[in-house]
Amino acid sequence: MTSAVDPDPAKPSNFLRHVIESDLEQGRYADRRWGGSPGDAQLHARGMNDPAKVRLRFPPEPNGYLHIGHAKSIWLNFELAKAYGGVCHLRFDDTNPEREEQEYVEAIRDAVKWLGYEPALADDPARPGVVVAHEYFASDYFDFMYRAAEYLIGAGLAYVDEQSAEEIRLARGDFNTPGTDSPFRNRSAAENLERFRAMRDGQLPDGAAVLRARIDMASPNINLRDPALYRIRRATHHNTGDTWCIYPMYTYAHPIEDALEQITHSICTLEFEDQRPFYDWLLDRLAEGGLIASPHPRQYEFARLNVTHVITSKRRLRQLVEEGHVEGWDDPRMPTLAGLRRRGYTPEALKLFCERSGVTKSGGWIDYVSLEAALRDTLDPVAPRAMAVLDPVRLVMTNWDEVMGAGFVDDCSAPVHPHHADWGKRSFKIGREVWIERSDYEDVQPKGFFRLFPGNKVRLKYGHVVECIGATRDAEGRLVEVQARLVPDTKSGTPGADAVKVKGNITWVALADAVPAEIRLYERLFAAPQPGSEALEQELNPRSLVTSQGYVQTWLAAEALSQPIQVERHGYFSVVRDNGGLVLIRAATLRDSWTP
Ligand code: ATP
Ligand code: MG
Image (cartoon, rainbow, N blue to C red; front, side, top):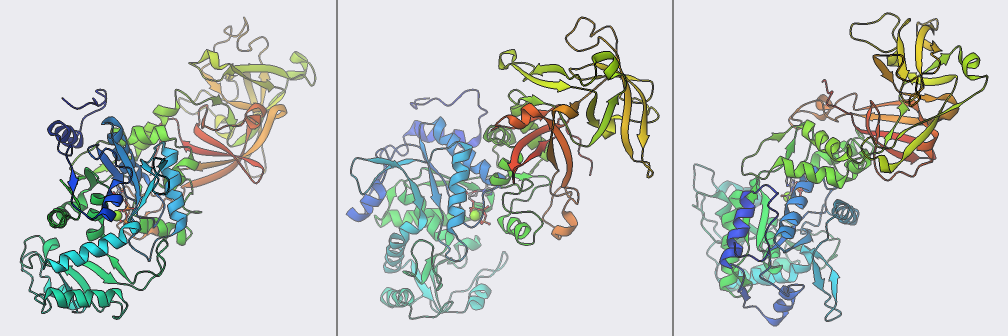
């Protein structure tokens, strides 16, 4: 390897790393030149003091919130740029005026930042010599794209087709049938230019004409059968307003965006593989015309991320929001980065998941279980531990007053984290009455059950041993109270603690030390393993959210928590305040326990 930067040898290699390493070795972009006008030179040069650098981009269309599939793309592009001493552009691919909104631009910006990535810096055009964090907008290149189209027309490489959309579709042919030439295909360059300007100037109604590349109507690749470059669409654009009534097609705009930003490797998902010949055709022609730099960027495709029980189509996600199946784009069940974040997912967990999911050319589904595993594996070493009761029932120690003294509350403590003694201890109280989990009591011992049933002894974790003596049920048979006797001198951490052996250890919160909390137990949003094929209603998991009223200890309620905690026995939770009340949002259980 002759490249200046050695990639992290601990990171698994993938085919994209091989491509980049080989390009660096051969100095492919070391001597990149462009032949455009001084105006273009300025556009090209923005932030490109070193055009040879590995330069990647993440190009979201601002028409929805980013989801876990985008996280994969963000992670891939930014991490590759970092590994090879390059940069990654955040580019808003805002060429479609109808579906894009400022709200989405801001949400995307936040999500990239939250993941911990810094978009590329660039020279500030208004202040020579000053470098600023820079975002790229495809719509900033509309003028250039228009001029490039006029160039293609002049070179006989594009023409205005005034057939109807239906006629164009029929003439395209299909996999087995070559297309047929449009009657407008052989107009002169001068006439095409005149018609294209008429399109631009608003002299033709929407849909009356398109500009098409003039390539080959018989190509075995349908994408090369004179694809559309521009269409007429009277719509106000979030950035350019009503300046334009013609807009470039995505397939035309995207390669130009990459070329102007001097991207080296344009990484996309496999659906675009058949577009690659057009990507190269267009940039080869523009480079020949001296409009863009040479060598131009190359496109590389990898398999998109699919996760079982998760939908990653923006259209479907919007439908979930609009039809009220979830509370919004940031509902903790949504696979959006905003939703995952509220659920308790951390940037580290998502990056680990992306890394483990691999970068390959062949698609497939990654099991939802591995998303949760990445969360557990990143949280387990750092999440503070806590006790909480999610479905509370009262346990009364009937001999407490005799043994401990009437009204006495005892102090207990436990490490904040079992492997970090230096993180200190959490302190809490125990008294005559404590909340325990309803499921920790049974009238008759089921096989393998070692928690509370009459006659059995268990430890109140970090507290004392108690012996169950009975329980009270209401008229409907619902458990209202469990009674037990405190076994004296058995408190954890005291010399007598080990004198009584027990098989069960249960978690609890003393009534004297309890703060109420709303518990929101989230599960996967879709019961269907590969959702998206049927009506949403049939695929949704009806129990994706179960709420209850529970309790946490006072210390936890008082703590300002910026990261998720592990509630012992119950999983990883975000602790948030909602309307002044305390809410525990479960990010994941401690182990995979999903049953459909
Ligand atoms: P649509 O085109 O339907 O609006 P999209 O998911 O392609 O949706 P974009 O905003 O175009 O949305 O995506 C931005 C980038 O994220 C693209 O480079 C795209 O390839 C990548 N991307 C989107 N979904 C995934 C996924 N599931 N796995 C990996 N990369 C993805
Ligand atoms: Mg897309």
